[in-house]
Length: 308
Image (tube, rainbow, N blue to C red; front, side, top):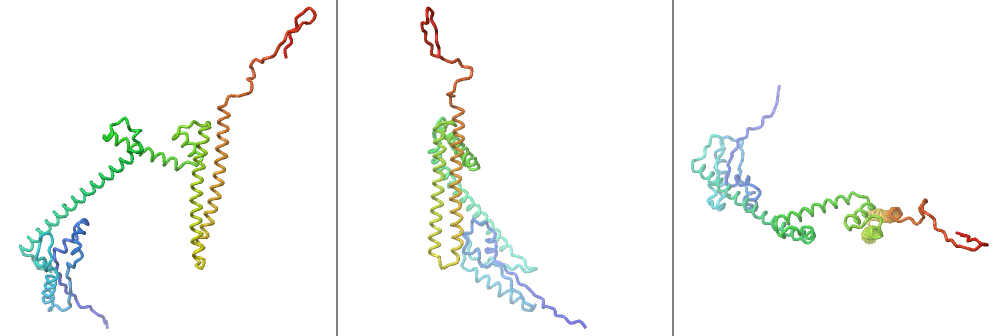
């Protein structure tokens, strides 16, 4: 013998307010204007297991929809309770309902385009303002390099942006270089000092020293900040993380100092080699004629020349 349970069949009612439902699918640009009803209930879908009560539930649901939407006004449309429509099988919308829905859809489309145009115009205005501000800043940096063009002309502005592009490329190139190569490159290409000269050496040393001192100051400030945090959290075991970072920062500071000394030695050595190659030798050339001091002396009846 088979025993089983059969669930009672459900009978659904489907009522929709097309004003609210259509509003859910407009573009996001309209959300700020339609926030008052965008999340408002627009679908009513109760169910019953009693087929005989289906029509009564349908009437109650339609009345609920009409009540919820009475008093709302959207895009010049009022009496939004008439947007409540019965979409159950076999139901057909009236010509009046169909016409009203199409009018509302057209109004939404126009409003959507209007807001999109306003947004595009606003973005264009912002972009133009940002461009003007950027050109002003670039003018301060690269005006001398673009002076062959008339200021304010398209060619002048293109030149400014091109100079900025080249500067960014230069920065990216420097970022990938080892420190010693970066210092030398900057002194030669940016400041125009020839390798092997005293000015070149002084430039390399100043850049290297400045970079080291700046990094050292950052390290010291970070260590001090962490130590203050540890002192204020001694009763909390979480301070152990700060202690570990302090040790890492101190180790890094020591490594930076070692790197600084190593780079300085390399710089001095390379400079010394360059200067030796460029300097004029002080020793005589092997085949050069030698110069002697000579004197004439009387010896008997003859003149004797002695050179030494």
